[in-house]
Image 1 (cartoon, one colour):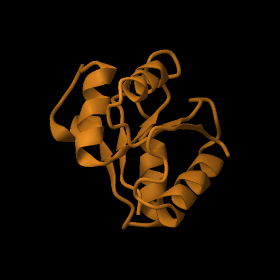
Image 2 (image 1 turned 120 degrees about the vertical axis):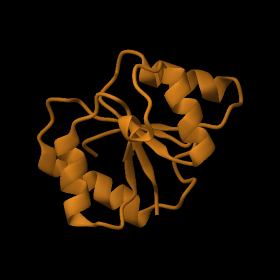
Image 3 (image 1 turned 135 degrees about the vertical axis):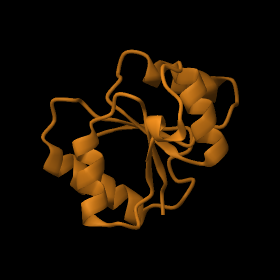
Image 4 (image 1 turned 90 degrees about the vertical axis):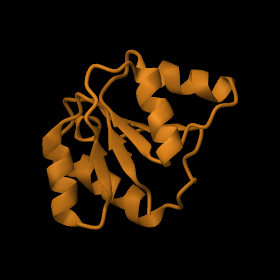
Length: 116
């Protein structure tokens, strides 16, 4: 099952909805690890070390840093980019599908956009 890490500004309602659907889905919020105000490269590095796919609403910088890691041959377990104005239900549906039906490294080096 895919494990997720949300960046600092990710919508908590999506996380709660996903956990309500399946308590076994492993979603960790960046602030839960006791870090705050870190730059995107630090978040991506930590996610890579932990084998967690990053969930973000940040289309401005996170995606570019993710592709930069790939270009430099660094591990990048994947980023899921979600527009913040998207309704929650289809996002939760898509994340549940990704978590439950994907292999651990299936999205390595990729940025995917939701809704699917």
